[in-house]
Length: 318
Ligand code: FAD
Image (cartoon, rainbow, N blue to C red):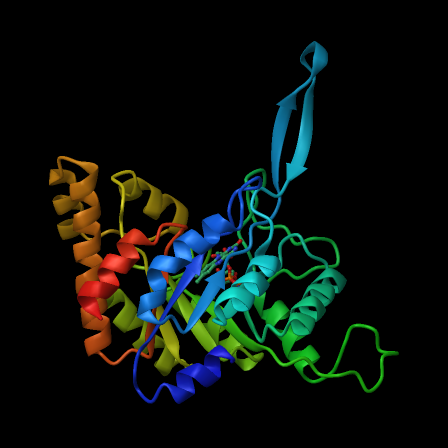
């Protein structure tokens, strides 16, 4: 079922969903199942699977030569989505990004998804790859997520890239997009970010999943701002528990979010990894309780391949 239909049919009962990342190349699909199994008792509404584009590395060769190698370290997004649906009959949401795809490759990826019976896509731009200082679109590809949303929305109307294709079968995707309670790091301010978020909705996106955040007040303000800017689609808050001390610096650096002082204060007092995880879980439990009490349509958890912390949060907050 499409995510948007699930939200509409939930009748105010909040939905639990989560995101997983494909395993590193060389690992078995069982690693994915191992991270899903502990969360099954909580009846997930859908599972997102992230997309990871190529990275460039240098390999030492004979006589000191360095060879530049392009490699996707975590392939398999579409296959994982199909495998999860096949095994558990739970709807999946593959992430589709602009980076690394030209428009025809995007079209073909969407045709694969349609043929597999996958009816959901989270449409994203993607981050710059490590060797780029800013995002560079692939030749013949999209520069911003809004363009990807438009392409999917066109296919949903039966319009493909080749204008000679007449009477094409329309695809049937529910399109989600990303939103940023603390604004996207490239945006000059929240107002500009809101304008572009609204463009994604006007182009055909039906719901928003937010970037992770640790301060609910920022999320509530973001929802208010969205409504002010005429964005009326459901907004699913994204929650990630802190599970390691290094997250204190990793989260701001990688996701451009702030950790509240009270949280860092508690984390820095911890004497063991176990205490850090407990503190992170406790914080996420409080966040979840408050979000549920505020009537959110659901909460989306980022597991990053580790379901133990999320399972503890669900036991305590739901
Ligand atoms: P956009 O909506 O295109 O916005 C990017 C920036 O450009 C923003 O600053 C925006 O304000 C600005 N902008 C938008 N449109 C225009 C325009 N027309 N003109 C000028 N400026 C514009 N990345 C991955 O690689 N793989 C994943 O699986 C993945 N999953 C994610 C899941 C979630 C829930 C979230 C929140 C993020 C995810 N990301 C993922 C990261 C995402 O790709 C990055 O945050 C990326 O930098 C922006 O993506 P976007 O879709 O929000 O881009």
